[in-house]
Image (cartoon, rainbow, N blue to C red; front, side, top):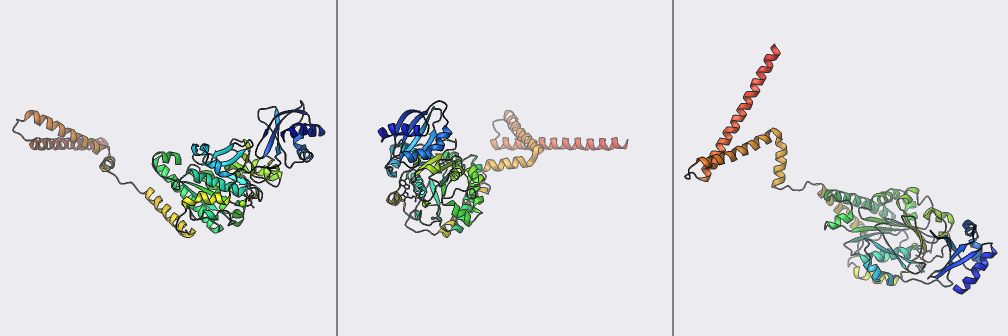
Length: 460
Ligand SMILES: Nc1ncnc2c1ncn2[C@@H]1O[C@H](COP(=O)(O)OP(=O)(O)OP(=O)(O)O)[C@@H](O)[C@H]1O
Ligand SMILES: [Mg+2]
């Protein structure tokens, strides 16, 4: 293949008036990457325009041409005659994945050289996935869910799976990892998203109380709080059924990162009525499988090119920092899903309504208890009383206590050894009371004198 391309590609390019020299050629599982340095003065835009015809002449489907950042070369991504399938289990069981220090590691697939691509969902902090029917979205979503399951225990991670098509996530029911059973009814989806918003707000009250800013700091204090990942397969079906879910999704997308709630939203239709500008602005990390038009590619990635992808898990990952990477998704079979889920099956089948009611009640109780005043100890009660009595009385109390101490000291020095400790203390207390009385009397006298003086002054 490489030898063929070495001669065929420059020859074909020359037919279209494109000249230059070949660079490195790398064979990957899906494509052969050919670096090419254009002759001086050539226009990249012209190559981009011609790429369909070049593919036709080479007898391949879907060549993608890109500029290599910080390089004088461009890259032709030419499909392999036989694309390889990358199985998911070897990646997720690899030492590299197991050792990864990410809070929520997901395996996106492999890059064009076959190297696994892993990302941290907690940093993304949400993921928008698009692609036409059969492009590999559901296989991708399953691989993300299973990546997380392989890395986290059920008490550290809970899933909300919304599946309007009713077929994709059914095997996740009765799992210890589920926050609620898989949601297939659209009315339940809205109720569940509402509950997630409540959960997020409740988590913020906990953070306030503990004086932390996010779930990481909360967990560092040794307190328990699971991450929640909400996956929606076919967002357009959901939003067409009930427009109000957009508000809840938006609220979560804007604020739920610190609370440890993350969204993965997939859609077949990346049109602007489904993926509105506000949703896009809050989901900066996006993964596009093959789409049907350059317009769809623009909507999801802000670049064209996803329409040239080859399907079956071939995708472009747009990261928060704007970098675009071509990734081939790893293939998860139904058997892989069954095998990985088997250890976490619950005995009891769960009903959505019961579970949601339980969750709501629990959140309500938690919220109320977090608002209740904590019980105060002796010191706390004393501090309250001290603040309540005011400055004047505080001074009196201090004077009284000082007088007692002084009294004890003078009584002890004066007294003979015959006097007992209790006599000394009672003597000191009496003299302290007298001195306080004297000071109160003196104050009263001063006040009366002042009042008399004031009235006399007025008369004058
Ligand atoms: N990473 C992959 N490697 C190999 N084959 C894949 C991969 N991803 C998907 N496929 C193939 O493509 C088929 C369709 O994939 P999938 O069901 O994920 O598509 P989809 O985008 O969810 O489609 P729909 O929108 O109709 O639900 C799979 O049954 C599988 O045969
Ligand atoms: Mg699907």
